[in-house]
Amino acid sequence: MDVLYFAWVRERIGLPKERVETQARTVMELVEELKAREDRYAVAFEDLSALRVAVDQDLTDFDASIETAREVAFFPPMTGG
Image 1 (tube, helix red, strand yellow):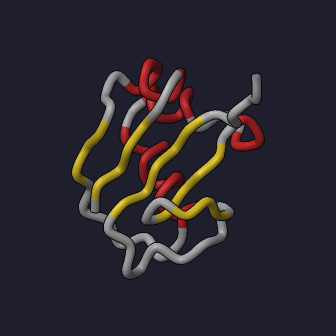
Image 2 (tube, rainbow, N blue to C red):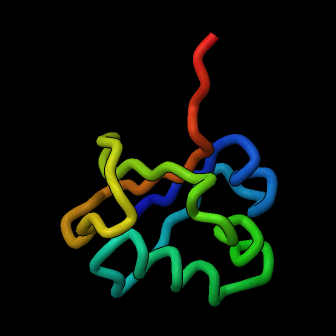
C-alpha cells in the first residue's frame, strides 16, 4: 500500500510517500510497524493526538481497518482561515 506523509510529518520522516508491505490490519498496527523501523518514524508518530489519518482519502480513526486499503495518509489537523 502507499503511505503518504504531509506537512511536518513528511519533514520528520524525510519522505512524502512510500510503498509499504505490511501485515497490519489497522492503522494503529501500521503505526506501530513504522515506529519500529527507525527513530525518525518514532519521532513523527510520538504524539498521535497531533495527527489525523485518512484511509483511501476518507478521514478515519487509528483503529480503522486497512486490510483492503490502497492508501493511508498521515497529516496534522487542518486549521481554517
